[in-house]
Length: 544
Image (cartoon, rainbow, N blue to C red; front, side, top):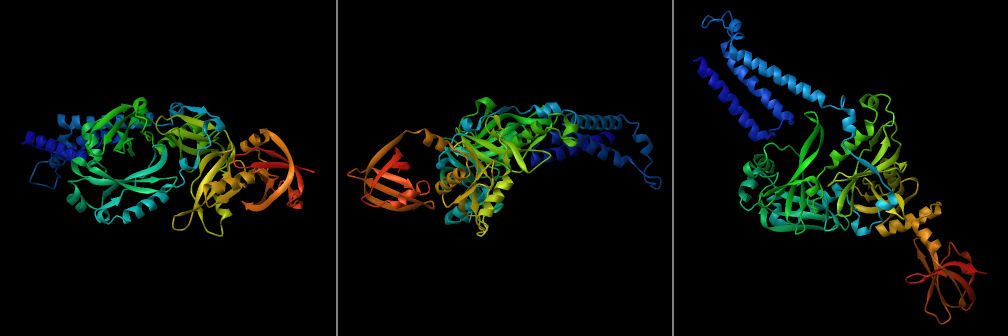
């Protein structure tokens, strides 16, 4: 009877452990805290099942009192010893993995290089600037889904919206998902039929229908549930981040990064390798970090990179210093955004002193595929201040600013952000100078915003790259009789356009720089100093 009870206790514990494993899918890995909890739970459950039936109380006359004898049995001793030993290992592993006693190791997890802003961040064209943020992309995705009558009743838009650089275009990509469990039962044979791709520069939103539906997603169930599919293939892997991306042909894949712990049992997480899973067929292929295909953008999640930089910035002089004196401690600001550079996606965030949140001491760019990190020492306003300045410029309209992007405008670090109305639609754009956030320009288009911004910088004495090129360009002189004169207003500034003698060359005179032009009329003789241009010549001075 006693042996049968022991076997029964073990069987029940194993069944409960199996159900727990199938539902929660923990990795069988010594670095997995949940795995340790299961290991500890098994002898605890067996202990309870084995001990409780044998304990009687003095008032119970139907069975003998065994509570004083149980602790003398071999099974009792083995169970108690196992529970205590496992608990001690788990507790010691947690302590020895913490930054409290491993500050220098945590601080060295990320290698940071110093970059040169104007060299590393080229001035990009407008079709490469992601003008929308995630919330705006979600609105566009929902609107697109609502227009598709044949799909809207069975599917919904998933909330992934992976930031990617697809065919040199900044996009957000998200699959559809089943609207409910019942809809999964009725549609599971054909899989999920489409995904949505949103051009973050043009706001163009497309639903791409697949010839074969996606069978392996986080929105499926049982063996097709993505995490369970991966767990049974890779029982020891601890997955960190799943991103939904497309290869060059538009085939959907799940990019599944695996955790690597570098400090003790549970500390110092980075990424070990990457499993790429075909969303249609479920076929998986494993890659080392340096072998990941170039079309993959997100190996390291933005949150992981930000955490690693915070370790780097705050633990330079130890853990105690990060809490008390905080000497030389730097931390990232309260947000981040993405930049597409050289077909990779980089995470941008500002860096501020941990003792002051009023200004940035610089900013960092972190590559989501390689973990390459560059720091740029440029003091200026924090992003919140820039957003407030932009919102103040249009306070009468009640627009709100998105978290800024960092752009190179004529070699000047510039915050760029969209201004949205109450419904979340982008209405205007704003540029704010990083080092002087009082210089704020807005416009209905990016080009209009930039033109206003460059003018404001010139008015505030900031010499831009275009100014340097203009001053370095060759100046010519021409004398002639004004044959035709016309006036125009560009960005609020008056310009006169002149034709001299029988020539078809157009001379552009900015009235704000050459006020005496208003004294001239058709038939007057005039001498102009000018530089060559593509469509017309820009007058730099009028010789009196």
